[in-house]
Amino acid sequence: MNLDKLLKTAHCTETQDQVLSITPKTQEQVDILKTVSTQYETALWQPVSPHYIKEDTQVHLFVPANSSETVKDLLQRHAITHEVLLANPNELIEMQTRNDSTDPRSSSTFYERYHSLEDIYFWINRTKQDNPDTVKVILIGSSFEKRPLYVLKLSLNNRPNKKAMWIDCGIHAREWISPAFCLWFVQYSLSFYQSNKDIANILDNMDVYVLPVLNPDGYHYTWTTNRMWRKNRSTNMSTKCIGVDLNRNFDANWCTEGASDQPCTEIYCGAFPESEPETLAVADFLRSHKHIVQIYFSIHSYSQMLLFPFSCTLEEAENHSELLEMVQEAAQKIQRHYRNIYKYGSGAKTIYLAPGGSDDWAYNLGIKYSFTFELQDRGSYGFLLPPSHISKACNEALLAVKTIALKVVEKTKALTTPA
Ligand code: 9B3
Ligand code: ZN
Image (cartoon, rainbow, N blue to C red; front, side, top):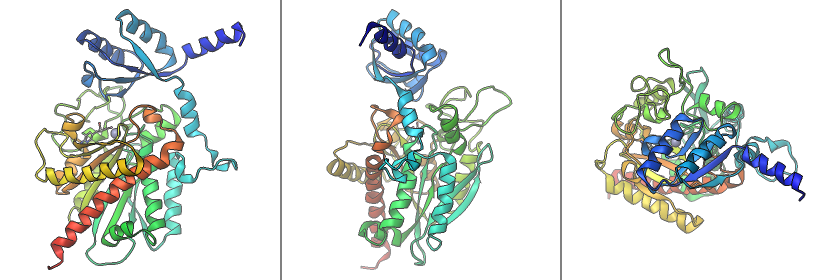
């Protein structure tokens, strides 16, 4: 390479967006990082809020090109070392949004790609039309920007007194693998009901309600404007900052430690519990179906964890050991089949104390098998998991869902079938 070209490339990498991995070693470095992530135009990937930054724990920070120099200078002046986690996130983003469905050379299926909100609405409609006897679409409400919130009801047979399972995806806009999982799950259920005895056993005993995109406004925004957006897109007269963290807006120790009442933060809890139309729609639906819904799943990313209540308190759930056994078995199966490690445990003990989450709220409503999954990866790509990883990430999560659902089906049978 000639010098001219070398200089050009060097210059180019200097001025590109990057994701940095930084591990603060002292309290002073912690404070600097907190300042950087709040005062400069950056997006904190991990932890979710500057509040959780602590010594000897990795911070993943998205740094846009225009603040790159200032941020790196500041780190250097305080002798804070960093590694470049992703040198070219824009290339990854381009890869994820490229619609290669028309490219005949592409070998990936519909389910191995990410889809825009419009595509997902289209898919919902097509899935209903292709499966008129087994799939119903229920409108449970609408988002702040008045987009419909559709739930697919999978009902594979007409047995009386069936129980139900709920799965929601896409509470957090930037966690794209989550909606991809909901689509994957629906497709798998409809395709393998006839041939896979586990999925048949589950679907013979319960209906499944799937909400593919709980936060459509945020998801749309990540496709059009800002790939790193997390919250919904609601506005409020009292502030110029947009969005509420929907996973802090449920009525479970609402807005205590681990959430924020500051609208400009990523973990803003909203004006009051269920203040957001998206939260209210889900809460109303589950309240009116609480006698049949046995299992609640909420799908997030990233960091590979299988979590159960509580996140909003360090106290143990009444059936803590039962829930622990279930996620442990699921994690073991994932490790055996896919050689991937998932951490597991109650939310508060496994990641952080955080109130207002949907799983804790559903648990308190009486849904005793309540889980949040954090899918792949553990930070190599973070929220920008390449499409080529979708199938493995989804199959792992599917195995965990099946393992837990089968356990619940067995337990229910043991209770209702006389010996
Ligand atoms: C948070 C809460 Cl509040 C909960 N109940 N369960 C899981 C989490 C973790 C997710 C979050 O909202 O921060 C991870 Se993206
Ligand atoms: Zn999330």
